[in-house]
Length: 284
Image (cartoon, rainbow, N blue to C red; front, side):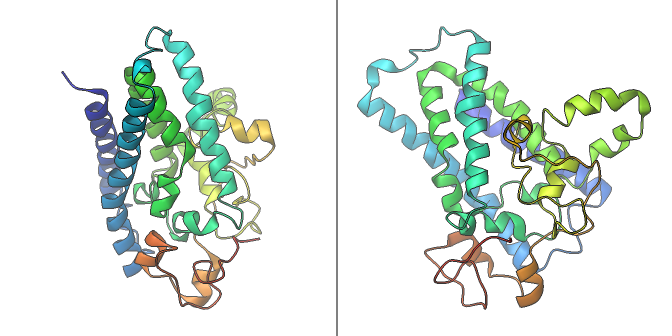
């Protein structure tokens, strides 16, 4: 029988592969906007993310086993809905807050790689600095909750969450067709205020906010867009930005892939760089 850890690996790889196949069929997996540094970074992230996230999970489990061995499975008797509510707070809300903080000067260098892509794709989902995930509170808290007995509920939660997140980054704008159906307008009104959709998340990746669509200073939600609605960072236009990426890359050229991945251990020598010394700021 599969363990929760093995099931999580299958869920992650399976969903990424499924959406990648959709992009390949629709012609979005190899975007013309992707340059050499993009391609190298996207490949490096495919290797980095499972190593870092897996290391966090194993380390969290080892720390729990060392400091609180008697608590293993202590919450396994909880009903599924209580576990789900706890995960939405401990994982999804903390990720919203972590993402929001990552658009401040403090953590922007660790998140910048996610926005340097001038395209939307499944390739962008985990495109972040390695420390962005190594320090992410939600991963550590999830590791703790799995140790306490949330294992299989967590797998179901991750399946739903990743479906939403990957769908919100995929070049296939699945919500676009649904907006054209008048009978679905009430459903879409609720849906786009509940979960992240391509329209709301594409806006977060926009090159500019001057087009009236882009909103990189908000729309931080991962699974639940409701956090943006609740905390006043939501903008919903049902439109898609004309361009993605970062203005400083357009002006000075792309950062090296290895600097984007391994800052602050490696630093940029590029002019006006957030990855140089001293670290810079996110777009205003």
